[in-house]
Image (cartoon, rainbow, N blue to C red; front, side, top):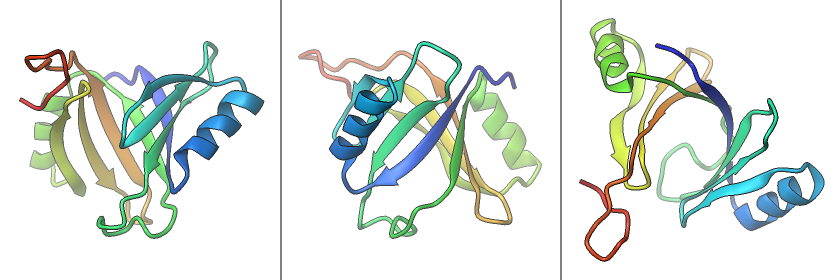
Length: 132
């Protein structure tokens, strides 16, 4: 595994307010905005910020939870290796329609480690990203 970038992930109720804060006061720019997440970045060495909209139907989203996200290479192979080693995988590998592989592990103290690999999104007929 080769870590190629780092991201800080926050689960928020008001993603527009957080987006305004980080872009207005701290020089971040919007990279991606979807109904579920907003990705903010800078052109320097700062970690990217991912704002996840809180989903009241998902367990564990009632309070802030620390997450560190690493963009990596070869995530499909890493998922297989981590599973074979008995790592505490708390979200199995899945592909998102906007173009990423994602999986999560949780350490004994509740720190969530998210591993992602950016891939080309699958474009459905009509030009909209879709799941394959």
